[in-house]
Image 1: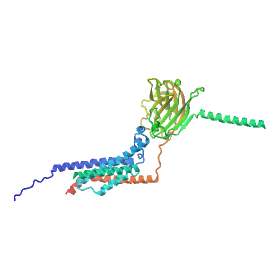
Image 2: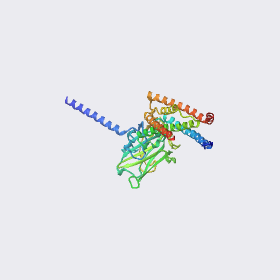
Image 3: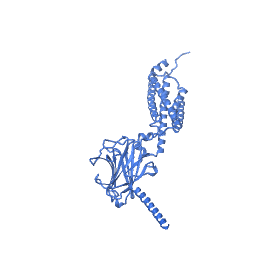
Image 4: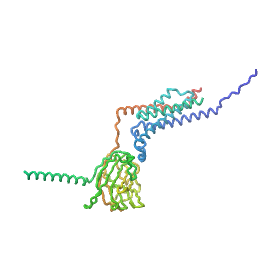
Length: 150
Length: 273
């Protein structure tokens, strides 16, 4: 029986290198962005000075543009967005980090990240609720993206 | 007996007259300086219009004072003064009514600010000057001036803002004056600090020849208050501590994660064999 080698497709080395470089760059850039949003979250969710009236304290000259109640809504929306962006970039960074090292992201790591994202918002009920909703939506989005890859 | 009763009635009427007249005198004499302790509120738009729909000036301290001239025959001009404050600015609105015939086309209202609560240290002037008031080409200009040797000079670096609008017989002037070394202050401005009291002279005049054209004035005092620090409840304090712990832990994790990113290549090589 004639034997011949099947034409097996080997993953090219150059492809692997460029994928690794991409992953590494993504890990670093996402971690930096996550850190920036984490710092912003610390300023507006974790300090006394900017906890209330974030925008109007930073830009008092525009405070007349909206009624006071609407500024509270804007403040809360900014707080929610900052926490969600921090989570978004950190989860991307962590996911790519895990992929680079060849391990899957563990559920406990995911839960810790979700838990700490929520803990940042405990001082304001509205921010907490909307962050929770946002986190669920983000996790659902990541789940869908993961599923569609296979 | 009847005479005694009439005398008693006359005495009573006399006392009632005294009470009414003294009341009248008190209302119209006004203290030389009205003292304002402005509430904190949201910044109103400085456009000469009090927008009631947006509850502008709703928290303002409001008093009526009389702008007077040096001439004893002049009865003066009653004006409403509204004062409001926020963390960066002091807002003063001056409102009054005048018949058209009593108005002049070059009317102005200004706020002269003292460097303290003393009435002898007036230095900084914020002023809204009309030209052709009530006419077809009516316009106003906000001027930042300072006083030196009783002369008014223009401050080239304008700080604050001012606007005015005539609506029927009523005119509304609005001023925004920076406090607590906010942006825009320079050496030609009085530095208004929290916790201090300052004298403000409200001036009214009829042409742009300062200070000769000043016809009426009066002095008020304003206590510049510190921003309110809202006392947190024990639950809020507890949540604040939780948030701080969360941020500290996250910071620790983040630092550890960054360290792992730094050594990621070495780690990956070891894992991949």
